[in-house]
Amino acid sequence: MNCEARQDLILLYVASELDADASRELCAHLATGCRTCNGHLAEAEALFFTLPLALEPRPVPHRAKQQLLAGLNKPGRRKVQLAPRKSRHDVLRVMTRQAAIYLAVACALFATVAFGGIYVALQMEIRGLNAEIRNLKMKIARRDERIQEFDQSIAKRPGLDIDVFVLERRDTQPPSARGHVLWDARHQQGRLHVSGLRPTGAGETYQLWLVANDQRRQPGATFGVGEDGTEQREIALETTRDVFIAAEITLEPQGGSAQPTGDPQLYGESDARSR
Amino acid sequence: VTNGDDAADDVTLMAQIAAGSSAALAELFDRYGSLVFTLCERILRDRHHAEDTLLEVYWELWEKASNYRADRSSPRTYLLMLARCRAIDRRRKVANSMLASNSANDGLSPATSIESEWPEQSAISREHRKLVIEALACLNEPQSESVQLSFFDGLTHREISEQLGVPLGTVKTRIRTGLRRLRDKLRAFLPDVEIL
Image (cartoon, rainbow over all chains, first blue to last red):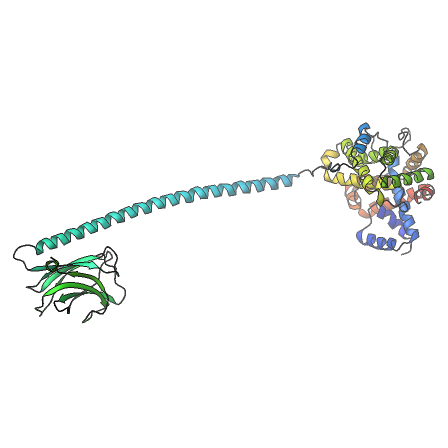
């Protein structure tokens, strides 16, 4: 394309009506310093900007010149631009965003109140259950004491030859663990009562031992305990004439042992011996 | 379409403004303030916005006078380019409903006679104005309308095509032909005074 042909393009370029590709090509050519085309460009700009001369003149407001001079070198004087007016779409978008925020806040408040209520209700329930558990434990303890008192009162009845072995816990058992053995030496039979023992593990069993004068252990019954650690049962020995001075309970393998292999869990001497 | 002495005076004023002379700026304001304000009001169709834009243009000129190149355009052309650009920017920022309340026939369109004149202190003579009005009158109605929508309203060819309901190619032809005719009419007065 020669410079003559570019004249029309330059007219359109000045009017901002030349398409992007043609504008790039023209700018590249002008940048080469072509005097003809740069002259045409200046001419076209001058031509284009003579058009306002044809307008009906409007008087400048009187204060404008004064404002112009007063505003020179004043920082921020050009901040007279208006904020873009919000379209209906913008307003809807803001309203939607605000509605979403309000909804989220309402949900958060509702969740807080709901979870707070549930938490308080659960706390009250737990407190009630704990109180019930305490009452049951007290009842169990009172019952055990009554049983023990009853058994001891039987042993002290005149004419009966019954030993009472009050069993006390060893460190392997909880503080509430206790028990006693009523032993009728004449008939070689008796009764075992324990409470508060921890449940046995798999393959384990509790085993009662009666301790003779020479410290030999005579194997008694093997037994487990219920969920509350309690067990009551009759015990009997067949052919022994030993005098027993104490009773002991150990933890043994399932089926019991001929001699104690585990640590003592409860141990108590004869009430008569202790007296 | 200014005489050579005026253009040379304008260039001198621009140099003085670049050196920090507020008196030179005031002088340039007297010369072209009315023209700039009229152009801004025509584009914006709002007197208050036009006044704000007028001040912005001169303040920008005050700050950037050193960027002006006398070998590219006359100070008047440079000032009007700046004014048209800022006015169209503002027009796009402000909602059209705020600006378009005035019709095109409220005194903002190009004149068809030279009964009214620019202020006495301005550097635009009655003869200059008469030449431009006559040149515009040489255009047929579609050409004049298309050129005005392009220049005064800053519309693209496509927007003019949609507004007038004519094909895009027709709009391009009208504008190109219209500008060519204006150039032919005014060319005799342009080179001596505008290309320094």
